[in-house]
Length: 257
Image 1: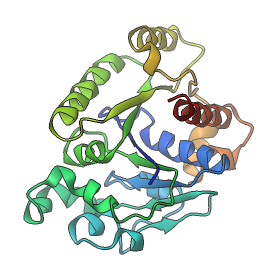
Image 2 (image 1 turned 180 degrees about the horizontal axis):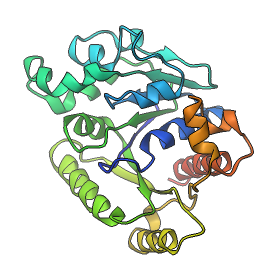
Image 3 (image 1 turned 135 degrees about the vertical axis):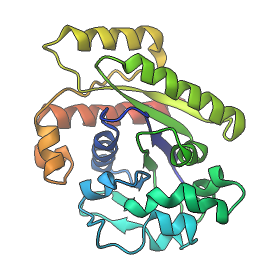
Image 4 (image 1 turned 60 degrees about the horizontal axis):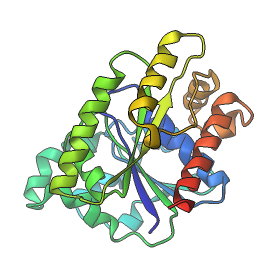
């Protein structure tokens, strides 16, 4: 299996799902095989690549709780190099039901993923906007975490919280978990605030902040509304170009290690 990366930040609206889908598409366009794991009961990553979450019977929940073979839960997409393990609102019952299944609830995703054939270069886990058991499962199963940071007020407060969670997961469950990097999202060149937040993040986390910045670009939400990656919707848009740059930078991280 390739590298497993959780895309996480307990703050909502920072671009986790958008980054998951568009980074996956950019990696696919670079001839990488990518699996998205939709760890959010809202199922937005699943919808974002064209899955009807109300029609599917086998989801991540069935794999985690009912031990459905995860290979039977994986769905192909119409986008190059991308498969997905979809989710829907059933996953919201994970915390309630997992205690009846195992005495190591934090480890369930990691155990489930052992069934996956070694055919993916990257596994991207789209985490919910919380630091609950679903996110803990994702971080326990991951090699690293990529943290989208929206360039707005309270960004640093959210970073402090996710760093605390990472520290706890490393101490208790996954000592090898690394920070892949902070990704500055929704950067608005017309406001001083975006520049100030970006400068603050870079000054505190120099080596762990991606050079690539995701701008506010109308093509990104338009692509989301059409349930497709921005690289498919408008390949030459600023949003598409920025995610392509992020994917290349991610690959460079691996080559430089």
